[in-house]
Amino acid sequence: MKIATYNINGINGRLEILLRWLKEADPDIVCLQELKAESRSFPEQEINTAGYNAIWVGQKSWNGVAILSKTEIKELHRDLPGEDDEFTHSRYIEAFTGGIVVGCLYLPNGNPVPGPKFDYKLRWFKRLAKHAKNLVDRELPVILIGDYNVMPTDLDTYKPEKYVNNALFQPEVKKAYAQLVKQGWTDVIRKLYPDEPIYTFWDYLRNAYEWNAGLRLDHVLLNKHIAPRLVSAGVDKHVRGWKDASDHAPVWVTLTSPGANR
Amino acid sequence: MKIATYNINGINGRLEILLRWLKEADPDIVCLQELKAESRSFPEQEINTAGYNAIWVGQKSWNGVAILSKTEIKELHRDLPGEDDEFTHSRYIEAFTGGIVVGCLYLPNGNPVPGPKFDYKLRWFKRLAKHAKNLVDRELPVILIGDYNVMPTDLDTYKPEKYVNNALFQPEVKKAYAQLVKQGWTDVIRKLYPDEPIYTFWDYLRNAYEWNAGLRLDHVLLNKHIAPRLVSAGVDKHVRGWKDASDHAPVWVTLTSPGANR
DNA sequence: GTCCTACCAG
DNA sequence: CTGGTAGGAC
Image (cartoon, rainbow over all chains, first blue to last red; front, side):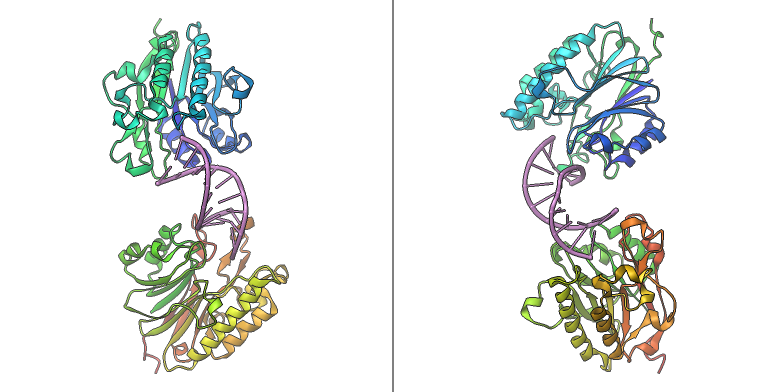
């Protein structure tokens, strides 16, 4: 079974890219971020035709997340729990599909630092950690997957010194990510490739992709119940090189069938 | 020798379309309208690489005309003569190339009627007619070619009654075109196909191309000196069907070598 | 750089 | 409908 995350950066503008990649990669479950579309303009028909069910939460201009799956999707949540004033962004959707609880997230970027957007990022991260705490020890396979907008360590950016003032690399944010993982989650890329620079995002500016000036922002976290099923993981880096591609590349993980490791 | 006109509707957005058509149609001289680009962002290099010299007048956002030629181009005018306050639009360029005086024009649309834009259209047409009068009897081959934004007769629109209030079909405008032709010009399409509906433009709206709901707006006029050289003319209608094409199709004419008919 | 929103022009 | 523009976000 293959599960992937892809920050598509505008689902309608990049529907062809998405469909091409779906066909090529053939994942069973896909989490999308940055739909940049209102809920009513989600291209459900084309996604269905490609062989996927889908649930999504959209909003005008920004954010927006979706879960695609070849099998039935039971929606669990359309946002993280939290205070009323936090509910304006479409950044989290959770479902049960393929026997797995899938939390699909798009964490706020948070720039500039300091400022209200950075404060919101930290608050959002707290909400996520609180919810994750309730999921990590469940007797259910749980995957928390998406665009975390964090480079967890120096290994996750081509040039750490360039990002010292960036919201994606602030000590508070890296710490929040480390503490989240410490709840008992497995960061699959770092589990399989502990010492390798692996990127999931290359800026559109200054030909970042050509220079491999990348960042690792998209992460796949498995709880203890599902982590033993981990087989492989990777980044479909070449997709970033397609004409008119998103600035992110898809990240995927493959798992054994449930029960195979027990 | 083959001469063509093509309202490209944004030369940078449609450079690939233009190059594909140039390769396929292989014209010797091409007049372009609606560059929608400032002069400095004209894609001279790519045009040169495709085998053409070029001269152009651009402006921000709108209008803009160019003459491309496989042979040397001597620029004659960068606008029609006229009053100072008429010089704000880039709608006319004239050159001597391939032994022919080529006037490349983009007449104002003029909608809505009535209004200052329609008045400007009529004034612009007067300026054109005055200039054309100076060209028509020259002992030189002259071609006046481009997007005239006029359907000269009922035969030139799929549904005349739909256009009674449209600036492209006002009696004053049709009359201005008829009087221009009457100076001694040959409208090559009507010369060769006097009774056939032939269109050069299909609106983007309501699938006009699929329904062949077209208009004939792009015209090729020859003066008496060059008219005897006329061999054939046509519209590259299929180009309108290409993905992301302009709403106009290229119109072309072929001529015998100079002197062959004398 | 490339999205989005808007508006304007055709 | 599909260009262009501008500004905001990332």
